[in-house]
Image (tube, rainbow, N blue to C red; front, side, top):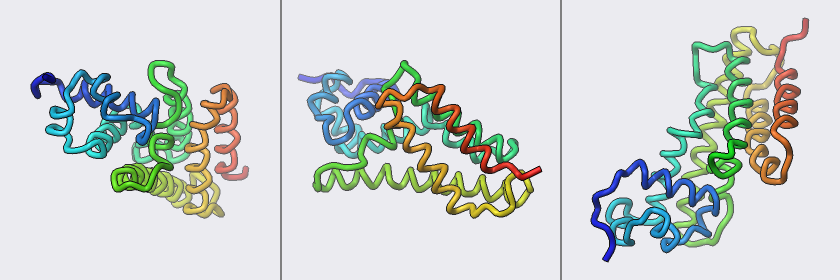
Length: 198
């Protein structure tokens, strides 16, 4: 018989987040999630409703924790270009931190998968988050154009796609062994394109 539903939720979410981050949504079985969390299937389903429900909560836990670096672009106390730079460099530092699996949970955990309803729902959860991140980057770039911090000829929407593509690509580059120092240098090169000409 499994443990009763007397557990610390944020600890369970932290463990589940690590499992999904390391193995992806589809490959993370309920048996593996049970073993990692120490909870019975009944407790997991009772608390989170389904594997997809647990995944959604784990994504929220990630966004409030390691993934909060993406929120830097929305910091209105920062110069927009500084905010963009802090987000890019913070993303590389977070994704290369050996304290957790490499890469970005939102980028790598449920991009592809089988066609079952729960897989589709999991992909929708991370796709919605990626859309929010892209929108935040666009708003930051737009602020930079409007305030004169960035080049006036930038198209904020297209520029956001470029920056977000870089952010999402950091995961695969790190997983493939590209050193963080090279990615930081690449981020600086990307940021140089946003500066106003002197």
